[in-house]
Amino acid sequence: MRLSGPAHPRNVAGALRYCATPRNLRRTIRIALLVGVLLTAINQGSVILAGHVNTMTWIRCGLNFLIPFLVSNAGLLSGRHPA
Image (cartoon, rainbow, N blue to C red; front, side, top):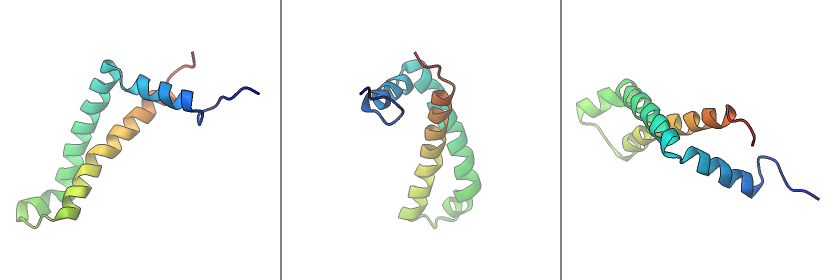
């Protein structure tokens, strides 16, 4: 029996290596920074400027950067041609 498919550990490791290449990291980090700054300004800007920041505000700000990073990596993987 041959193990394969997206859930196979070798495929997950390959996907992580692909996303971690310098070229792809530069692209996905740039996207995450741009989108994260914009989302934080839109969604949390008034809270930050008013000085009403708490732990949940910082968690939300972090997610504003993490989610675009994950989505841009998913986009990279969806366009990847199998070897």
